[in-house]
Amino acid sequence: MKIKIFLPIVLAAMATMPAESASILSLDESIDVNNIIYPESFETDVKKMRENWYLTTYAVLDDNADSRPVANVSEDEYIRRLAAMPTTIEMPYNSVVRAHINMYAERKRSLVGNMLGMGLYYMPIFEEALDRYGLPLELKYLPVIESALNPTAVSRAGATGLWQFMLPTATGLGMEVNSLVDERRDPYVSSDRAAQYLKQLYGMYGDWSLAIAAYNCGPGNVNKALRRAGGGKKDFWEIYPFLPTETRGYVPAFIAANYVMTYYDKHNIQPALARRPVVTDTVHVNKRVHFQQISDVLGIPMDAIRILNPQYRTDVIPGDIRPYALVLPSLQSYCYVSSEDSILNHNASQYARRTVVEPGDGSRTGVDQGGEYVEEVSVKYHKVRRGETLTSIAGKYGVTVADIRSVNKVGKRVKRGQTLKIQTYKKKYVKTAEQLAADNTAAVEVAESTEAASAGQRPQTVQEEPVQAKPAPKAEPKKPAPAPKATTYTVRKGDTLTKIASRFPGVSVADIKKANNMTKDNIRDGQKLKIPAPKKATGRKRRR
Image (cartoon, rainbow, N blue to C red):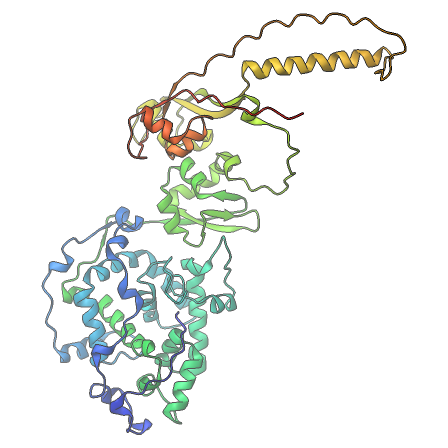
């Protein structure tokens, strides 16, 4: 919903006409269709839209949409078809409506085909919300002109989501909008609030054309146009010249969207056909969880989780604040419930949010002490039981389906009684020989100090009698620490060169690329990478 304020622009041809004579019948004689401002949704990048996870996974796309012949339709046929649509809202015809129909049916045919495919998922959500409030079901095509059915669409004015709510309107309707969650992007919540808002607007005007116009530019602009048009009951077409320029094309675009989504086949437009239906279910999450944890354990693509849950802006479900809904394909929703502990524990330290943090005391820890983190592999064997799948087994051990398939060289299915090798990974901090020797020296000093204290001795600051110092024992020469060695690493799902380099202190991304003769950062699952020996750190001496 894009609320903008324009100075009223009265069409020159109508400037001398009394307000009462302005009607839909006189528009054709007074409107220059070349000056129509089309909704922003007409600018949707169709190529990028076709890469949408839903369309690529569940639909067959039409690659010849733009090469099909354009249908030649007469004005009488347009009028007949519009009148034949079973709608409560009036769907009249004029040159403005025709200009919008031509835009959809001629220049934006691929966009219409894609939206018809996306509509298989979204339209039932819209219809359910509208029916809940007793509203005309043809309003389900408002998101077509608002967002082109893109739940993450953001307009130049900042309107967001399928129904394009501005922030003040959204929060006024009770939607949650913060850094983590934006319910304007939630298909279910935003559809419910849009139906609620449309019902309020209809209650204000008692006319759907005015309510739809107010949805676009706000009641303030519609009320101003009504005052300028004079007294008496008016509709959109009578106040057309007094509305903001963008809103003049909004109701015609709504009529055109209803027309083209109904009569697309009459214009040689092929919808993105469904390969198979997507059946989803909802689970309530009361723990903080990252999409990547869900993706790794359940084997669901990140894009799938994002398109089904667009309201989570940073891929984080803040279930530790309050319960939130998570939409997943039905089978995976059951797997989530049974594998929730494994999901939450998977890379938990990487995605955990610290609640209490103590400032450092200046001591040197971790790799600065001369140690390093190494990745330990633990091997277990699992015998497949009845009803188990790779997804459920991966969830049990906190690994990914891709890991199991790679280690066991199996396909997408496993058989009952089959034994699978399961490899789990964890990081372990290992100290070098130098650090171990330093720790031993410190331990000896502590032991001697403790022994002296138990014998009743105390440190002397002044010697009353000269004491002959005993010669210090000769220190044994320290054995040099073993030189760091090069190693080999097998790329796992989700790895990047940056992540891999972080596992080997002293080794940079550039070192890995040089060791493997790489010019780019691209890597693939299962690839073997040479990890060069880490460069020896040059420490600085402490000042005493």
